[in-house]
Image (cartoon, rainbow, N blue to C red; front, top):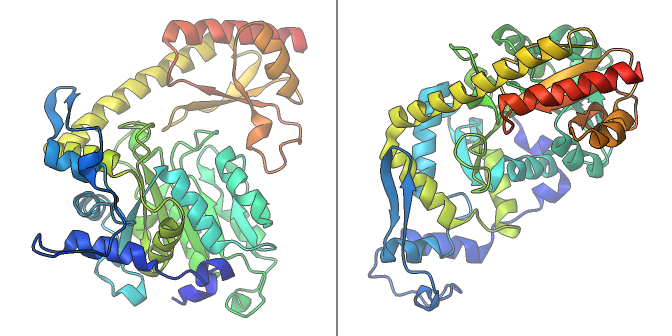
Length: 425
């Protein structure tokens, strides 16, 4: 693939940071190397000495004085080697990407660590999207995606979706206005980027079937588009076997995948990953070099040590417990919805994630109902309009999260919501 044609002028102009290269070179060198090159502070002046972090049902994560000095120091922009190595093996075992054995030029699978998957997304968008570009996504979608895309001045084109995600037939209709033969021509307006959340979509809870992914991927091939597979809820799928990912289908090297540990290990540690063709992941790393420099070495070492202690089997054992919790929470919310809302609202049971997307009957727009009247009744949901491309468009939906509240709180919240809807109808 000609990856150069996808890059914005800003991304194409990025050059490696000489200082960052020296930092990474020094960290790979033997102890006998005497370096007067780096501008790193002396860790002996730092006040933190060591740490031991208790882990539920497992070995503690221990940072002795030597490891703590490393944890508090600068590190490579793509991520610390032992974490990247673990994650590469994990991705290959989990997704079996066809690109794993490709040459770098052909789109060999590469990875980098980002400060949460949101940083990865923002840097991917800034790498690929210029003012005036046409970008495809299935709205309603994650408000953080819209916040990252809209300032870039692109034209966001909505592809209709349902509870099973983006609808390939509608994507085909949207694309029909362009000739695939024009895709690689200079100045072409054919979309180059398609974005989707394939599992437990935020806010809809929609999960795309394998068959739909195959159809979407074939359309991406036909029109030479890149697919941004934003999958923070991949590990919160309630039924097995899990649907194969776009990454697992990627014979061309046209998928950029973002993963997150926020929902399964910690949202505050801010650890995410970008997986995709090496020429594009390398561009993301160049942006990291010039911005955050790297994700916290301290949090990377904590997560890396935890994963190495667990191994892949221990990781999946942890995931099974997380899934069971969220499945139980979802079932509690569905039970309460059926109890209080079945006459005044409608919804589809989510197969992944942590959200229920509820359409209120007889309500044209939920903004005022939620932000004013619901607050007065001490119940808070998210009005659906904030997830639309144009947030001022009327929207009859609300998003309810089942991650934090107890089943008793969920039940009481829906009782209050039902009263509000009845009063407003």
